[in-house]
Image 1 (cartoon, one colour):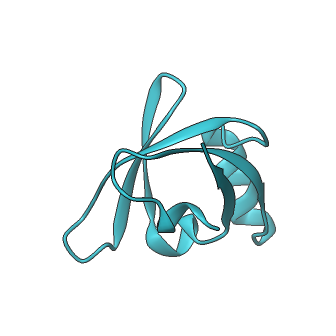
Image 2 (cartoon, rainbow, N blue to C red):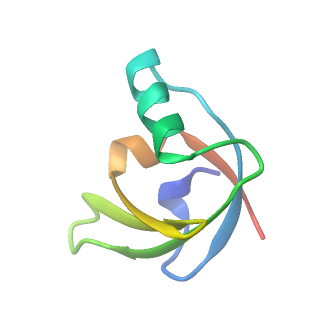
Image 3 (spheres, rainbow, N blue to C red):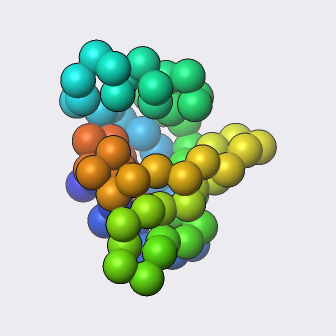
Length: 74
C-alpha cells in the first residue's frame, strides 16, 4: 500500500520508499523515515497534491511522490 491510497484522516506507518536519489533525499529532508507515523489530512480536488502531517509539521506532496512511499495502515 502507498501513501496516496490513504483516505483523508487516516494514519499509517512508513515502511519504506523506493525513489530516485534526488526524490529520496528530498523526502528524507522533510523527515520521511522508516517507522514514522504519517497522517493524510487532505487532498486536492483532482488528487494532484496531498497534505500530510508528519510529527508536528505539515507537508504537501505531489501524487507521484506519495506513490513511492510504502505504508502500513494503523
